[in-house]
Image (tube, rainbow, N blue to C red; front, side, top):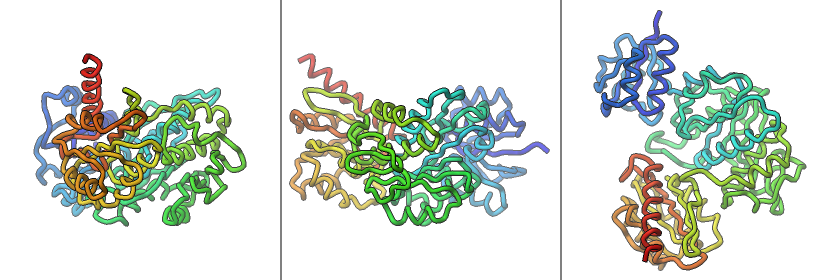
Length: 450
């Protein structure tokens, strides 16, 4: 019998899932109230037999066997609540795509650092001598898993970044190597309580066996406790040298077990959090028998990921970083901790009710001046004034670089690290980062023409 599938949400993952399901012979209906029927992707899929609607009423459930939803859509929306009550299976695109993975599957999750860690691991795996397959990156990093797995083979390495949203609705995920970078309080507006969020992260290792590996940050008792729940072989990594059973930092050097790998200050991207990311990549590399010198060279030349503490240039002896991916307080705290130079911080964004006072000690220790914007801008500006930090409030990211530069002096860092989501003014953090970069480039160009 032909499977009847309803896809809720037509982002890139929805389009990829529709294409994959049609390839399998399913009857597919895509529902999205914001659907643009003139979209080229819509028209291409229509030609393949996919149906589309902007409606999202309960009548759509009809004879539906499976719902594939956009990961960010909560289960509280009426059509998903009704589907749950009727016992209709609900999953995300990753759940359908994972069954095609034949090769070495490495999956990464965490509150912060998962994208950089994913990219670092992929870079290390690409450097493997005499490799016969390809290293493919997919998942929350921006490329749907179903765009790469159907045509992969057993020689390939699949490195996936998985969010808590994806893991919530991919209950049977089973990577050979699972990486948990850290777990803080994040996305609680979606998960409702921390226990749900932590449980989603734990799904990455829940189905692993003794033949698999869990590479996990060891610098927090809660994370150590998670390691006790897995059947996989646990490989810890620790910036605080709390375990030498995996990868760790000791006396300025990064080790894997008894092997000295490289000096911490040789990593190609700054920040103590990138030491943690590098430790995870080192663990993966050595578990896959990649030589130490190859791993070292790869991490020395790793230049970072766009929008994630990305070095975007220098101007008049100021170093400028774009960290638009810092969508929560912890990410900005980590970014600030990576600099010894004075920092001019640009921050602000969607107000999700976070306690921004948690930034006070970080601002006091690292920040010489601030420029704020977005819904949280006034709160951040108030904290800055209480700490006697010079601050300018701006209307938008587009107008934020000039006052930041005017605050700065030679050898300063200008850091765009919002500590908030982008949705008050932008569709996503990538667009926000691009706007910041464009405003910086425009300002520099005008300065150079003076």
